Length: 267
Ligand SMILES: [Zn+2]
Image 1 (cartoon, rainbow, N blue to C red):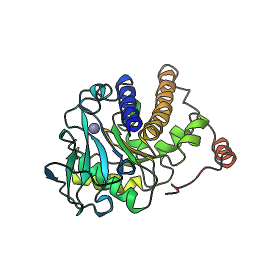
Image 2: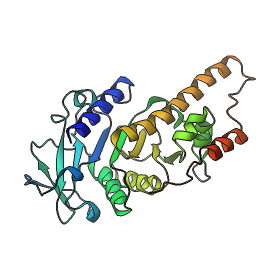
Image 3: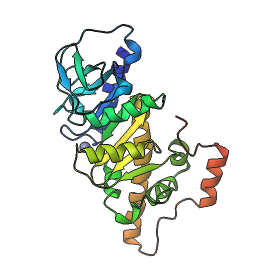
């Protein structure tokens, strides 16, 4: 378990270095149940406000509310804590020292509950503010999510072959919602079934992964493509006749075929 906590701290350091985690921005949860062979006595009970039957009795590392990613990178157990969901799935108790969790805890745990329900191997959820992806979320023309792949995904995939190879499910789009709202949680849940990363319009991203490094990598790959696209557009600003070309559909289909990429998440 120490290695997993260390990995969480490492990722928080990367997020800070990349400028994705200003002040207390961003939050995460990681399922640690595999490390608890018997029930651990936990402290005071805190209601979740939702019932999550599939993660009842399970253990999670959660970032603390008002805690900074840059501090968590050095002191993960002072800026987050481990919680156990009660047996009825309606509340949680801290295991060891209690650090009040992020206000986004119910939405992260709703996704964790869904992942357990589907037998998924994914254990980590991550919300962060990657600069270039958020910048693109201000462009209405990229945000129509009624076609698949949506235009934003198609644009990002066309920047370099690795984007398609490492993010074959693309990025889903959730229209702007108030942070921490039930609507945002529900929209995220409906999109995360089909995508590894979901873009919260004019806010940030929500990602799931087999572990926290995996979730971070998904965001990093997509944000790298967003940055290339924006850099290419700076040339267009000086040379209006030259739009970023992007890989052709044929070139992208070749990548899909050669790497035998999945069209939907296996689990
Ligand atoms: Zn946020």
